[in-house]
Image 1 (cartoon, rainbow, N blue to C red):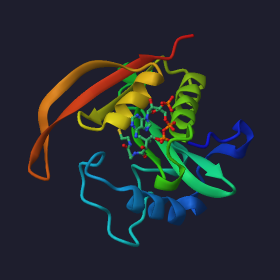
Image 2: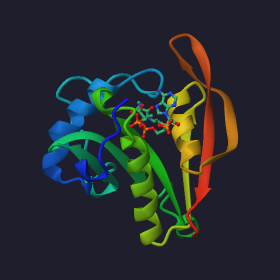
Image 3: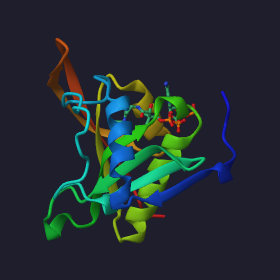
Length: 168
Ligand SMILES: CC(C)(COP(=O)(O)OP(=O)(O)OC[C@H]1O[C@@H](n2cnc3c(N)ncnc32)[C@H](O)[C@@H]1OP(=O)(O)O)[C@@H](O)C(=O)NCCC(=O)NCCS
């Protein structure tokens, strides 16, 4: 497997103009391993009132968007302000296994920490072994599980809750 040189990868915040490239990536990477919603139709947008460009960090290799992570406050509550949640992580099939996903998760944690958050959470399907390994490698631990929370392609799948501290 080819590890990329650190300098080859650029991580930057998304801009409104990135929407088309993001939508293509999202649709191509859709899989029942990771997704609980149906595959988005061709031409569907990505950004709306709840999904805004500043929530996304993009990974670019050779000028091409090969991945993104989206992190948001899990609720609008002031009492919950110290928490961020990863709600979206995708790496293009052609760029997987080269450390892009790990760099995106680390960048999301760094951005959340810089914004004052002290805890990052996420939800991952029980059968999504690649993502669970990645999150574990980034310091996330399982805090709980919603048994058989989703019915996907005829199988009941657990929703696993993971979290890590952002304190140094
Ligand atoms: C999960 C995903 C983001 C991983 O991206 P990636 O760029 O391939 O991941 P990395 O190369 O950074 O791998 C980091 C670690 O993740 C784990 N990992 C990644 N792919 C794996 C695989 N196919 N099998 C097992 N572990 C895997 C490994 O622990 C790896 O560390 P290592 O290289 O030291 O062994 C990517 O497979 C993807 O986009 N999947 C579909 C969407 C998805 O599942 N998103 C998460 C939803 S919660």
